[in-house]
Image (tube, rainbow, N blue to C red; front, top):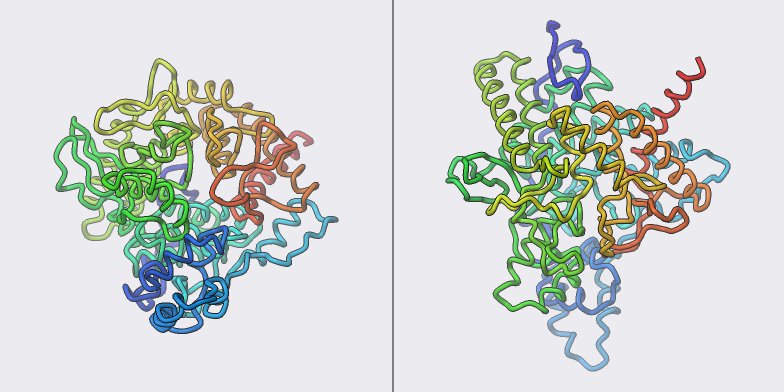
Length: 544
């Protein structure tokens, strides 16, 4: 074992130490296609329960555990449900164990500061290694992991990056490594990192932050730790790029789009075109208002929007008040392509560092892919007139300039933007998006949760650190201080960290969405700790 410098992008990793093993995840039993899938295995019973209104939240039933083999329950239902006096609710209660919210019964010690509360909360949100259960929709993971909280009882892909910010500030790099090993395990056994470790999430992913997580961990420990995850990083990248080689100009396949000029970019997608099991009733009822010929496209767009993490937002809708106008699969998202640029650069740097057979050639290829993506995204998504980045309709090349969003900060966070572009975007963010409690997600108050007046922890972090990278430390500090003040105010009045906040009216709880605002909350806690530590260091520096 020897030492040499690992030159990754400066925003990815820090100084190098000793070489680590190239493979880090444990091998396990592959996830079986026969694993319990509620929508598939319960058939008519699933449909009837989800439309009955027994559960206000469709996710409750897909997380419930059958007490008997699903086939036996289905047979019971077939013979019993037509009988006089049959109660569907009683039948469900007798045949299923219903899930409980994460953190149920946890009581805040109000004498603690917000930071102390968050550090105490990690144990509440941490799930131990899973035991395989053939009657659960949960995909078991071999190591401990942090869940968001409330109705979110499983790991979520992009949430975890922002949760890790706080875990590292809390000295829990061991838990960060466990979670990275779990994600590598999912890539190995499933073929990608799904939305969450549930069978009903297997057809989609979420914003691909795996490379950013690896960099975060390696920077906090040893740069060479990133090599543990190189194989998994490359396999996940292959999932996102599947079909690229077969595309002609102005064609798309799954998550890959080739523009008319031959440039290659990506979109969000889902491999299924039916209602999301965890939101079955909502999807089904909206679809019934559409002609039958349009329903598959609607389901595909709903699911692709869920893969984006922004479910739901005017960002994806031609009519911000009408979910039926979702056009997610027709759009090239500026944040997704910024993430994949980052992944390409990270993999290239790791390959160059390893210097094995074929590594130099692979590093050169990925470096070129990243630069080609950067040029294509800047040309397609940046509007020099308004000085802002927008999503792009890939068929026409039209920028969606009537729906500006905080996604425009991603090219700043990941360093794609030119200095001039970065300054222009920061000025627009300051003028239009900065509110008393931080940055608003969009400028449209549609009633959807990923719209104004809501602010979301992951977007606050990306935007604050994005503008800081482009020389606007003043704006970054102002937004950080406003956001932390809102977090602390909410904590003092409720004893809780919530998944989102109203940044325009500091006295009002954030709303919108398919479910009530959840408490916990993993990414809120992670971002709050990360920003609070940064604020504390800045204050200490001023006092010296």
